[in-house]
Image (cartoon, one colour):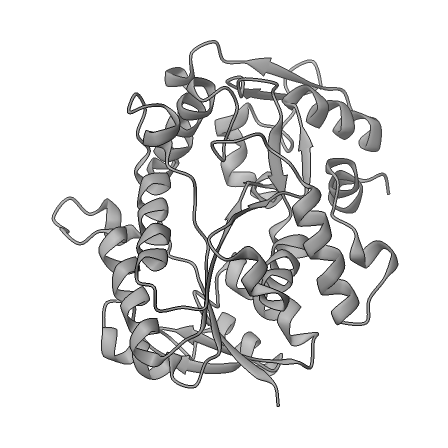
Length: 331
């Protein structure tokens, strides 16, 4: 009999990636939680084979009902939900996350996988707290502290490749990779990363779901572990060099000397991204609080592919170069 895995945040980028990957393995059945089952994204999930149910994270009873019968759950709380940017709103992401954890406990879930993060406060010894990082870290630690689950795994997504596909976001990063400068080149303008400049990039659509899938295949092995959600590791110079190679378009990275000068005013939720640069610089480039590595993600990707009868390129993480080739390659 298939093990039921329920996804909180199923219509989001992470949740839908997890659903797609799990559905390729007949050992699992997938249920997706949404506040609006009639939405286009929810309908798309339903037609793909996901059981779609209605629940609201702020209504614990509805989440308990949605989790009932689930062997495992994957949970992603949205730090960019407009509710958290409403000055009159007092509820926090931590409160939401803890309520979801409590619902999973009450529903008898055995395996809890959370899209968490390392603590920026801990990594910088209190110098640069970042609300989203610290909140997700606290939620993950709370899930571990309950002692109610056979396994609690934390999968932490790095810098989304997919952010490069959002044209509206590119002005924040110098126009790269959509708008060239006056000399015709594409300039990626961001602060340095820090440390060895080993930036952790992740393909949410192609790799993230498989990494989570791999954790569900062997949950005890990853109990209490923060799994680095990494498709490839590259410097910003390396990113632009790969773009130039694949597209034959001139590209370069230009450093913003002070991370505080990164202008995110056009999209206030990205204030957390600006703080992220301060955090990783202070932490010596250690986004996860430790050295960045992708071998664990590569192993998990391979295991998920094998469990789904896939091989070849489908079992390999997407490199920076292969991402550019897929979306910006020469016609």
